[in-house]
Image (cartoon, rainbow, N blue to C red; front, top):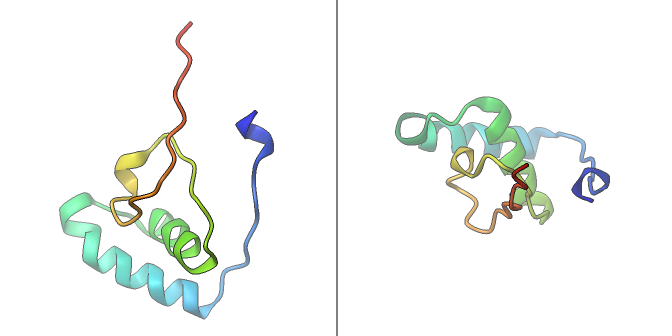
Length: 72
């Protein structure tokens, strides 16, 4: 179950700086907001794979894993 898979990372200056750069680069073309930029920067700098249902929020991460949704 994906709900049990999570890792926590502390934010630091390096992550904040990268997030700012990502937001500046992708704000106009993809409307990337700061929370998503922080998540992407953390994933890039800590070597963590991001699993999300919101693929469109992360154009800067080509290896985002999008789990399939079950339809009832």
